[in-house]
Image 1 (cartoon, rainbow, N blue to C red):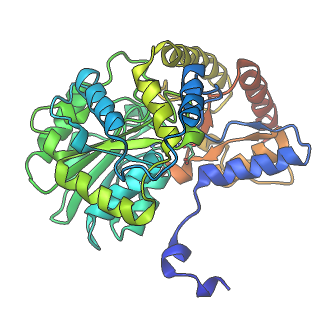
Image 2 (tube, protein in one colour):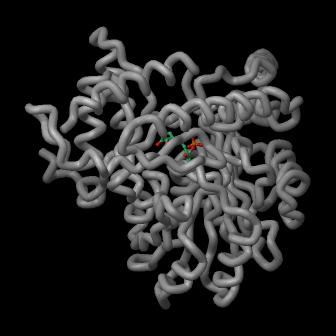
Length: 400
Ligand code: PMP
Ligand code: GLU
């Protein structure tokens, strides 16, 4: 019956991260001892002061009606204040903020609002799985510029310049980056900004959702650079820094005309973000940030653990992530090898081989535009990480 579905959905790829997580969940339900390092999601509980705020909001009994489409005014004000104070986006005001059902939804709103058919979006690759599919859904064309492991997976300003055409409408990157952990420093962002400022009709979508998980020191926001506020849509949310993936709260800060467009589309699609989750996220912003800092410290410790162990696996090329919670090793030295019954052709096969033999779920780099790599999330306990990498190393040693 699929032929009766729309071309739109038939052309769309399933989210590889969520598909792998589903597979791992199913195997676990069958009793298989799976270690799931596929889904990028904090293994911490939402901090208790945020949980308490949600309970309080329910008890107050006054947050059960539809919210304002763009989010509660006090929440938008608090976000604007945070962006001014922490991110030096001095022009940010409540009216520039649109709260959505997760940052993924924010990104969908932006592309649906900005793109006309055939307009190009330059995507810094490796890139987060959903960018390309959302761009295509909005009838845009993703144009990839590729960073290499030698350059810490960072595509350069020169590559950006070469990729710009009269059809370019936007560029998108995440920093800290999912899946590579790379972080753009101020000089690199300034070089990108300089190119963007040559035109008045190109916009930057700066996905800063891993802002709080940054091991390199300062986080720099594109919208804080001179002349960039009017050209930048900052995307952020609560899933990562506040361990709130299931609450589904994300937001944009955008020039007013783009914020209004996103509010308009959201008014037709969802009527706005969940009320209790907004009250909880507001408490997250206003509260003591110690939990967020502690979680980031734990990720840094695990990063060092994981990188050290992965570097001991023969044939793995491993860079050092400066943020987020992923390692993205180049595993191409295993392509063409076999255990006698199964031959690993590519990264998809290697993930399958590891899942079926080591019972560890990972995600193929192909889903992120990097077919030589695989992604491992280190948002898991030390014990799980050590055991998972031991198992991976063991089953890979059988490939000749
Ligand atoms: N951007 C990036 C780079 C991500 O890794 C994620 C992870 N889910 C998102 C956006 C979306 O986050 P959420 O929808 O949970 O807010
Ligand atoms: N961002 C996470 C990941 O990359 C969550 C899954 C998703 O939303 O795709 O794994």
